[in-house]
Amino acid sequence: MNKDNLENQKNSNGTVVFNISKSGVSRKNVKKGQKNIFYIVLKRARKLYDDQLDKTSCNLYRDCIQKVIMKTEGITEVEFKTRFAEIVIDLMDRNSFNTECRSRKWSPYVVATHLAAMTIAQRKEVLNNMDLLPEKVISCGKPIYEMAELKDLDKYKVMSEETDTVTD
Image 1 (cartoon, one colour):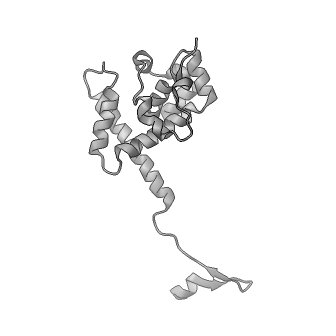
Image 2 (cartoon, rainbow, N blue to C red; image 1 turned 90 degrees about the vertical axis):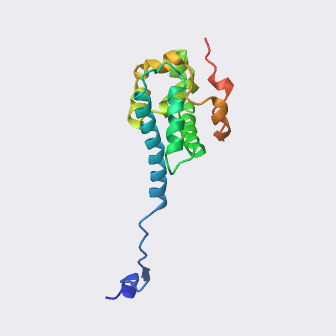
Image 3 (cartoon, one colour; image 1 turned 180 degrees about the horizontal axis):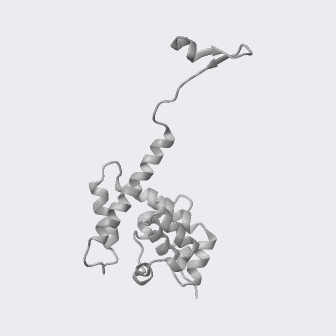
């Protein structure tokens, strides 16, 4: 059979069947690649953070992320923050997450930003057992990105000052 016969054949009912091959790159693969760049930035930022001798600054991890974004091709700061905000929004949109944070007198927004910076596996572990939240998150009490920086990316308005207040 020649190539034309492979692409345009008749099935047993006499209906013309088109055998169209897909290209090697699909939209799914492109999105997956973009997602991987996000996690590559976080992985490099964690390594840079771990290499620092003085980790007392609450903004150190954010600074590490910013440095890595500037050195990484394939992702801009806006693209990174957009993906970061999506994860934060997903977390803050969960009633169980908000309830758990509030019962412990933690800011859901602060915790969500730190969870968004974790690996997926670590994030799942913490969500299943909030006692595993690193002490530095609790003691620092500051978000990685301030709400004002991500709020414009929240088209569903999940992030707001009112939803983040801790009640006694």
